[in-house]
Image (cartoon, rainbow, N blue to C red; front, side, top):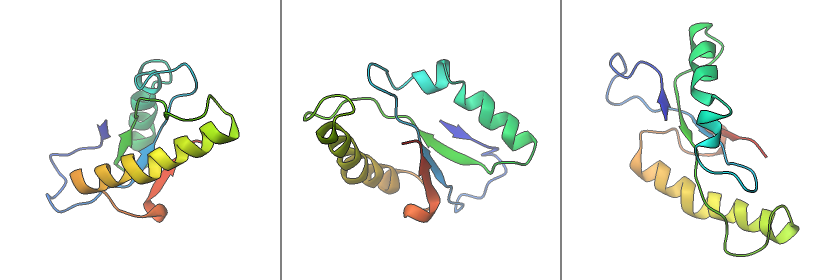
Length: 105
């Protein structure tokens, strides 16, 4: 999901990233459908409380650990940092690095 006015953004503009991961038993669409992430961000953009950004809502569960066990939490973080973030940074015009990345824990 990309929120902002992409028509007025120059092709060289880079965007911050918000990573929203679903909880146990959830799916990648939960933030969009149940959490209404796009509606909330569009409202915040209109009020100038947010800047245009890319929202990444990955789906999946790490192959090791279960739920919010220590092993599962570590595997989830590793998957995000080692697999998902590098693909997003290679594939989209994003501001790379932890200073331009946010998410829920």
